[in-house]
Length: 314
Image (cartoon, rainbow, N blue to C red):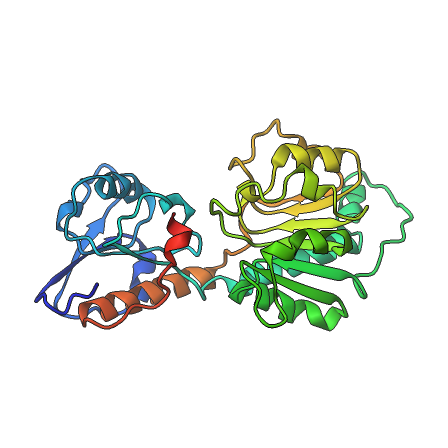
């Protein structure tokens, strides 16, 4: 899965101003740009490595379904790769943008928790009505926060929450050290006053938080989802929220954009965010810097970083 045996490697890149952050590429790299419509798309049958974004995604999926070609690497600019699940043959390596989004995503999660816990959302709604209200929002200090998806992003969230005096429990796919495994989830839910999900979407996590597990959360619990919308049963969640038993801060949704008629828009105990928790000008720069580094590694026949585990592509 290297290009060591080739004089020239062909890479397909988005024709975007941000591409400048990739830096200089080796002389043996032949770049094919994906320009905006109506310009023709590059022929992926000639490409070794692709950075898929925008209009090249559909042709890429079609190419993956066809006969094997020279394509060996897909380097995404995102951390999530669920759109590739079930479509990537064994001879193609997928690398993601792990390490790019930790800072803004962790900041969003902490900000959402504080906004919900300290009454800022309620105050903003009252401000829109020019209403001076009395309230006594609960403290975050002393609460138990369970973080589902305790990798680099989960750790970044935990690091930023600890100064608030919370009790943090990390949950990963499998247990390790002080981190609990998904097998322990149901034992943890009754004590989760704040449940943060940053889970990827896999066959194992799809619908993981369904009606039965949501019902295990304590009354008044706050559910924060900045992972993938389909990891939560949306109908069951709306039922719990509509009953006023749970609260939620949701950056990701089962259908995006969230339909105008969705019940979540009008719920006072819900913060709706348009899938922006990981976004910032700095993340865009870091993503393209990473892509440039990967192209240079590939062109030199060096090992690639951020290779995605095959179970995430099942």
